[in-house]
Amino acid sequence: MSNTNRTRRPKWRRALIALSVTIGVTAALLTASSIANVAISNSEKADITPYGQKIALDAGDINVYRNGGTGPTLVMLSGFGTPAPAVDFAPLIRELDAFDVIVIEGFGYGFSDIDVPNRSIENITSEIHEVLDRLNVATPVVLLGHSVAGSIPTTTRTRIRVKYPQSSGSTP
Image (cartoon, rainbow, N blue to C red; front, side, top):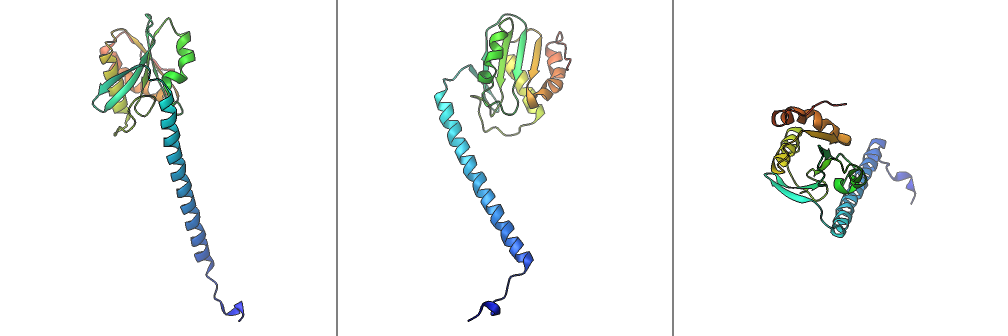
């Protein structure tokens, strides 16, 4: 029996099958990668001794590290790629011992809660304000935003000026 009687699938159908296989393999790899990332993150987190203090907010618990300095208050905010801000910023914090350094580990970072809904600039700004209130920060503050958190001081400065009128509110 010869193969000449076999009908070939149209090119568009072969392309559709190839695309479907590619999408399926990509989805499987992304799923496996996500599962591995969660497992590795949990393993690494278990090896780190918790630091800072938990502050209970309506949305969940947020971790805050404070160096105990007595100078002006410097609030450090992390961006993407900084999984444990107080640990990642530790060398800089050691150099800033003349400041009262506060590292607010936003939700999803460090030892703060991970599964928190409604992540918006307004909510993040409110959370920073609430953390500073809970810590009884009564002096002018300097907000230092790293990476994507660089936009937070601009949004936050109006709210901070209401509570801390001496704050400069200027941004680079």
